[in-house]
Length: 310
Ligand SMILES: NC(=O)C1=CN([C@@H]2O[C@H](COP(=O)(O)OP(=O)(O)OC[C@H]3O[C@@H](n4cnc5c(N)ncnc54)[C@H](OP(=O)(O)O)[C@@H]3O)[C@@H](O)[C@H]2O)C=CC1
Ligand SMILES: CC(=O)N[C@@H](CCC(=O)OP(=O)(O)O)C(=O)O
Image (cartoon, rainbow, N blue to C red; front, side, top):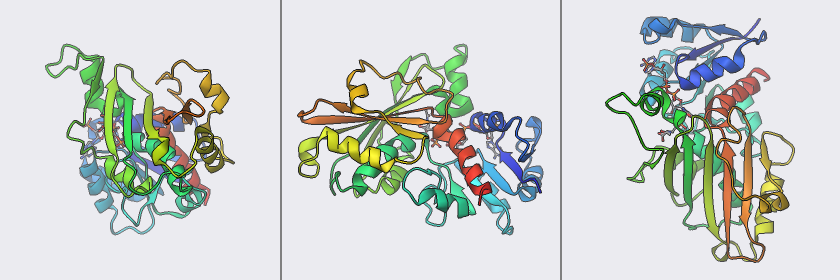
């Protein structure tokens, strides 16, 4: 039987991108709700319960409501793209490359929490160094990032693109999350294996899709003997054997004068760089991805495929 997939929130930014990625696929049947009925609870409940996999592309509250609509159903599997379940112990975290066992956990899971866009970059950089013992307990990790404006969903897209709106945003680049209580911090801490919450400072640029996440490190405060080379080697070893997350060779990074946030727009991959000077005191870890690709919809489709392959 062809597996049935329902995307709750299919007319939003993340949902639409998932639909685009599924267009033309014959191995799955997409159940769909008309745009005008997208908030009709009875129709959603019926479609959710008719699916083999429900992909939730909704705000947190609506995701929780959808999970509630499935509470009596022990068959439907769920991929939730919201923040609601990302550190819930009974949900598998949908970042397949984060360690060697994760893809199998996703394959077997009934409930998968798709990672946040910024956390995908941050955890992708931090977790391998924690696992290798290079980043010690107590290290004060900072995460600085810039996202394309589609990261703010339909509302921010309208605010950036329609300058006639009362709430239009005219800035080309702005820093936000100024209370330092961003919803992604717990997720970065848990899946980054950190014992201290990172200091996370996000920003948005006037480009639709793309993301740079930076984690600067002081070598003196890492494990004794840590160097730009040993950090790079730990990342290379961690990501060996797959081609979605690539670690850029040090010689290649050393030749770069800049990193373009849009380089991986419209792809589902992530690139990791280690910048610095051999023998120097600092390194800057950089992750490059599409906030809507590996940061959202690309990861959701990857997780769906893993679940279907079980
Ligand atoms: N954009 C991004 O880069 C990323 C987003 N995500 C996550 O994906 C989720 C969706 O975000 P995004 O696609 O950006 O948001 P959008 O606002 O673009 O889309 C959300 C969709 O959900 C619909 N919706 C809202 N409330 C309800 C409800 N109660 N019942 C049914 N439908 C509802 C909206 O309808 P309406 O038009 O009526 O409001 C809209 O179609 C969020 O949880 C976000 O955190 C994850 C990673 C990255
Ligand atoms: C630019 C922007 O506003 N970004 C969002 C994060 C993206 C998002 O809402 O989704 P995820 O949590 O699933 O990544 C924010 O900072 O709230």
